[in-house]
Image (cartoon, rainbow, N blue to C red; front, side, top):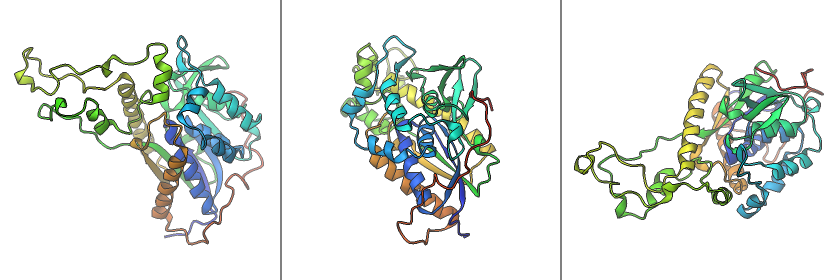
Length: 361
């Protein structure tokens, strides 16, 4: 295999909530090989990590999030019981803005694009100029969870709604290869049929633990549940399952040829799986049209979308998976261990002249 030491890479960082910490490990794996990042595009959490990398502030951010626990995260969340989302995210954004220290996209040493979704136009928009923190805030607004924002008359939400892995913004960049990180690797789940073991023979929530452990249910998290419970956000499905659960359809008194949903399955889990399903379809079509040279796939079951207290282990996972992907593509790295180069250095002095407002692809 051809040696790729010292090559130029275009990074594409996908959406996936807390699993986006894996992007940090992926970046470290690229840096360890001495590769130079010459362009970055990101959606949602990918926009967060990509923007911080381009601004040279990633390690400061890592130091901050690595020490957070669930209680810290709950304190950082701004509940919005009567707003357009469950969380306003203002405290997190304030800390992000402090780290970024007024950085603007057009002044970054590496070209950077954050992707958001314009609900009014039903199109994706690309932030390629303006404040980095505003671009990030627009890109991370998960519908129903984080409140959307208005920018230049556009109502913007999470870029993952239309483009979970945004390869298009880095097409045509003078890179030796494109590396994309997909955060929603999928494994089929067997939800059982009429012949499955009755739920009455196991603890009430074991079925959900067995089949949905690690699912990216955006509300399936203790601290998010605590926020939502303040304004009645808990789902009634947490109640005990109907007596018909597990009973073959042919034996039911009502004669209906279907069963109720599994016990313990809440609205958040169903919503999360539905969003993952839609995003997965979009991603497959887009990657089929524009495949990256190297694709790093992080399993969706590796963490729930709101597990932001698990930074260290997810960073390590992203590093390990990226090393494997690079080894498969280009062969093992034979350089001396610890030879790390700052991927944000050595890029162009400034990105091309761009409009001051988010652009449409």
